[in-house]
Image (cartoon, rainbow, N blue to C red; front, side, top):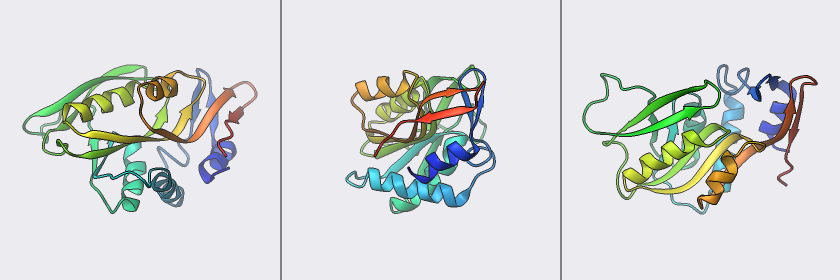
Length: 195
């Protein structure tokens, strides 16, 4: 069992509606030592890939992506913004993504200045449920002419369709923790054995 799996079992909180709260260590308050270990593990799992950029989506994927970037020779991290800002100028790649957690739809944008043809991209995100955010990021990378070399996820909800959808699309997907089931009534979390 890796350090993220141990932390999920220790501090993860199951809420109604298949929501797993990991905000005490991953996506609100962040355990930097844990993030560093996660970055190191992503490097181990994608060691055979040439990575020139890491692509994520705001906000919870940013810290994980930055930790991983340190182990990929400090490649740049590019994050898709969930709304157009006056700070983004010029042409943009745009994708529409639906959030499982927030129950809303966002247009996400990446400036064409930061993602280019010939880039070898590792996509990193905190959660994988239905796969909508990942499909949006894949679409953006492909629109740029970049090659998606792999996808790294902190926590995959294995009982939802996202992992199957992305793997069936032919992408190399690695999840540090896969939740097979959870129950808010008993506060139990069952993780998939990945050893």
